[in-house]
Amino acid sequence: MTQTTIYRTEPMATRALGAEIRHDHERFVQLLERVSGKQFGTFQKVECEVPHKDVETERGTVRLDVELTFEHGTVGIEAKLDHELTGRQVAEQLEALGGTGTLFVLVPRKESLGESVTDDERVHVIDWDEALACFDSPRLVKDDIEGEGRLLKTTVEARLQALGLRQRMPDWDVRVQRGDGGMPSIVFERALHDGEDAKWIRGQIQVTGRGMPPHLDDTEFEGFVGISVSHLSEADFPDPEHTGDAPSWIRALEVLDDEVLTKNPGRVAVSLGSAGNGRKGLGKHKLRLAKRHLTGRTHLARGYADWSIGPKTEPVGLDDLDALVETMIPWSNAWYQALQGTALAPTAQ
Image (cartoon, rainbow, N blue to C red; front, side):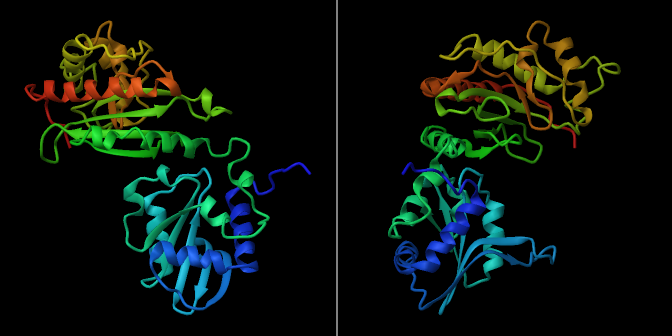
């Protein structure tokens, strides 16, 4: 008989897991005890999608995907296929379990997780391979978890984690996350000086576009590095009709182009694509400011008016991801050093 996938979504998969635990829990419980170093006592029951009252809203909006009740406490399982796991989700699950509960995060690949998401001592990580190995002839199979290109985002996140940017950029805050469009990215940022009014260099290596391609080999990435801005700041986005002064991000981008990109073009080229306008607040002035003060170089003013403005690279495939990293790190470090001797006005509050 040809193997087919049946459980195609996270709720389907977690319900199937709950059924396997109910049918034969022994080795699965042993896995949980071995990973956590705890003894949970006699197994009593397993439930799926258990609602708990949210402490802040007083509503039953927090649900544990799988909840196991034992003689000596409760275990919750937050199961993921290709969806993002956030620190907030983990905190909500721990709150729902109470002070004595234990949370297990069940993911396809452990290496796709950021350390900060699971740094609580009550949180432990297991993967689907370990879980499925606990059952004899389970109805839920590996093809249900990984079939039909289902884990593209998780696979890309694991690849981004493996780049080792935290070790290669030790003075930067580095994290793997998904952007507003849900695409995986690795973000890096560093303040130019101490204080709440500090400007930051903020960049990322991200999957291009707003959706994943059907196959991993078709995935493309782009690099971005920019100077921090706020769409609420008149200092960052003055009305061009009322002032001829250039905001500080213009000067920062000139330094980047003159002292970094020109001298060290890198292995991946800067994209010469047109910059767009900001969509929020005073960001509507971004493009006019760039055209006035960055004549012939408006491609430097891409990015986001509510986060960071700077250039992007040309897109590259998986095989050139290392080259993209080896381009972005020197650019970012060299720009940071170049701006140390440059007076940039602080962002107006």
